[in-house]
Length: 129
Image (cartoon, rainbow, N blue to C red; front, side):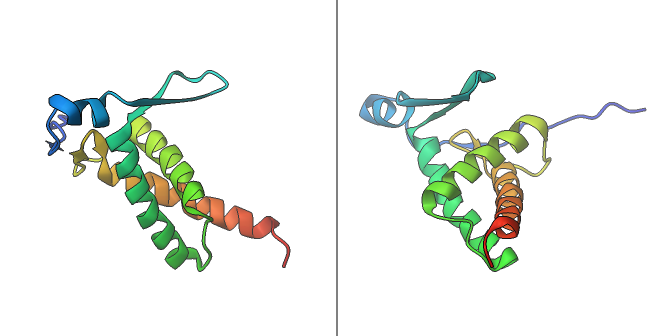
């Protein structure tokens, strides 16, 4: 069996890593950890959080189109996006993915849409009709 060779994921970082922009966007850090899982926590900085909010808007739109129901508010969309992004970025490697400011865009979108669709469908089963 031939070994699988994974190419480096192309990364785009348009915001400079120096000066005041570095302090605002890169040195502000948010760590998410629930019941000591994941062990070191899921770290995102401000620019990654902004990117995830934009992705959450896309996830809410696509989930609504796929299920004909909204998954919830923007906060719910961000939470679903963070969960889906973490799961797919951690456990799957997509060969045509690219990173924008450290966020794997295709992996994050796929994971968040899958989590959003399942969340919406399960919530619809338990809601009053």
